[in-house]
Image (cartoon, rainbow, N blue to C red; front, side, top):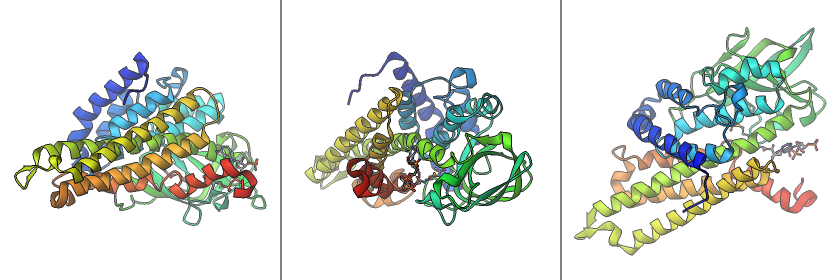
Length: 384
Ligand code: CAA
């Protein structure tokens, strides 16, 4: 498939492809098995400008567009989905909202080191009792002099423990639902701020997800991101961009599944011929290729709409919904193409299948994406 790309976008894609082939691919299987956070490659991603891709150069980033970001994520996720989510959380969920809503002082202090990859960022919205319905979150922030005192617990925080700066959403007005939520920049080392050991997960095992605990954690008022009560809007608009990133990650998994299936079916023989000569497998791979191209078009389109400065939430939801479901279908088919060995750790396709599943869940489940799309179609009738 060919999508008209600029010279700069092609160069970014090539750089990310080379990095992924040379430095990510060799460790992808072992970091998954060992559940090891790839510290060395996170540093390399920082050197290559992959951790602050869309942040302006004035704030330490590469100043690139969202299309370039999607292209880079696909290349990296082609070899390791865990690397891709570490990267996408830093870019989309942590750096982007500070660039959009932060004061100049907050940008200098928190965004610049994050975009340079010197200090990772994380996004802390979900709670044990509030996942798909973040307006119901209960972490609270009570004003005390020129600070807020935060108490509560956060769940499934990607980069938890490794990140320095966490965008924590907390309730400043208990009587107001979504309008009573504010965003805070909480940093490692603050008294009353701790985290759990990483969750033991089905997939993306090298990308650590932890719980966060806030116990009388005093955050200076100067570290509120945006205005009081603006937190829900900040959280939702941030997820719009995050969903484009997860779609890019899903593309990488879907492509890896197809490419490995093609290669294996040209080599593996059954009944005296290459298994790729059987129509049952040919049709499977035809569907995988067609759906991958459709997912890529939707994702690049969402990125382009964002780059044009137009509203892109619905396009982001469509891209994330479709690309994540294609990743899951392609990975499942890849395991089927490989047969028995596909179910073992001797080949990477079982990892693709485990990694694909989370793309249908995090940053809004497929059902939430369908809800966002339905509300855009039906308005009040769908509860918008
Ligand atoms: N941008 C800006 N504002 C938005 C918005 C958006 N995309 N979506 C909604 N809003 C605003 C609305 O305009 C409305 O504002 P007003 O009151 O001023 O009119 C307000 O937010 C409330 O909107 P809704 O009534 O639509 O809100 P809702 O409570 O019904 O929720 C939802 C809508 C789509 C279901 C939303 O709750 C949602 O996206 N849920 C899923 C959450 C999610 O994706 N969680 C993943 C966490 S991150 C993660 O996965 C971890 C990780 O580290 C990778």
